[in-house]
Length: 270
Image (cartoon, rainbow, N blue to C red; front, side, top):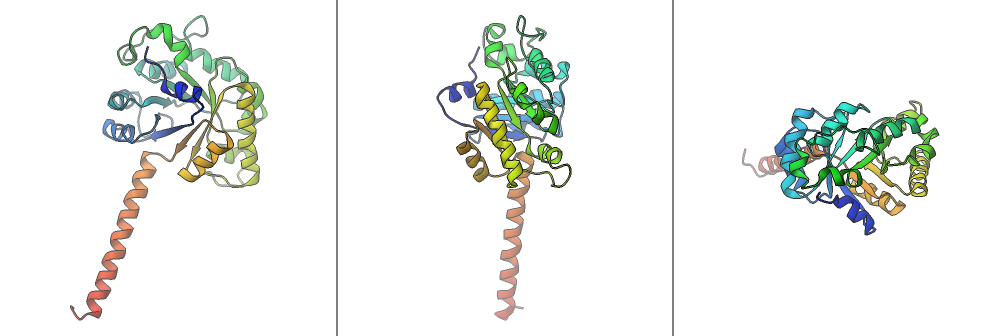
């Protein structure tokens, strides 16, 4: 089986950068995968796509050598196993609130005797190289999302779950829950209580020897998180990056045209 490059980078003490795809299109996924990310996650939870979109997106990403990951809609064994069979080298599972749920999630990720994953590696048996069954338990990454007050209350136990590779922090839902509606959802939190929670999650991961990942809005905040000790950061995503680049282009054009128009009037062209 082709080794998981994320694991190799972390073993070397290097942080990784994760891209994010929520547009259900292979061409978009191919473009994102070619930009230099270490991994790219296909968002099947909130993205405008489903399994039939995710599989060709992973095919399109293969040429770049980027590590393909998927955020599944929920902790449901059918979709988790189908995404693994389609070629995902890592799964991010939302709303993991207890150690029991974390253990259940891990069980769907691993073949016996370490779990209950069903064998049927449809595409991944071709995409991941030979001996997939023999290597998958060691190479595939299981990330649980901590997004609620209940998850924070059970943080230590969740992080200590055997077979769990890491915790992926979704700051929007986490803020929603911890602030009880006082704060709007969003990335790059600056509130002391939220930064304290991020450090608490990071400490729990480090104590249990697992990886800590954080979804960020800007490269600056992502670099800051890496300096704190996070192993992986995601910066924005395809739809937000597209909107930002298009918006900046339009704003620049409007400014130039407005300036040129004023200069033309003042120069007597009109």
